[in-house]
Image (cartoon, rainbow, N blue to C red):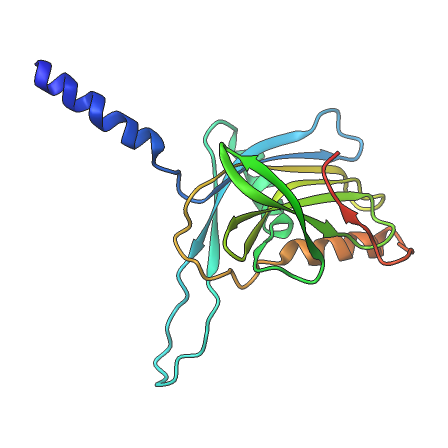
Length: 199
């Protein structure tokens, strides 16, 4: 019995240090005229690119899998999962991303902190974390579109575990398109945007 106890004590810390699979997010959505926000959690993991039968294999992009985290009802999960794909960013650095000298902590893990230029006129703040070499993911997103059914959006990266594939997803920059769409709806105008950081 004593030997078994000692074995468990030696094994448990290794389990505790094993990083979770994928990225875990918390999202809150405020719909216009709604009394309370919709809140839920989900995980994001990458998928391995498919290989073609061609003799010459060109570099291919993978995809991603988004799964709800238990704890909310099906209606809430459906709303969160429907909005999540358009609010995610998991990609190599893009021209809008600007690295800072700051390091931040995500789920106890130290990551380089990046700012993201947002479209002019859009009320939004986006921060990225370098979760792996040359791989950026949304760390914090706050936006208040002036048009559309959403009045406010918040997205927070709670933990960053290992990903199934190092290949960036094909739709890895979906957030950029969403921000542009919101800016157009808001009839944005300005001087080219600014690097946004967490307040």
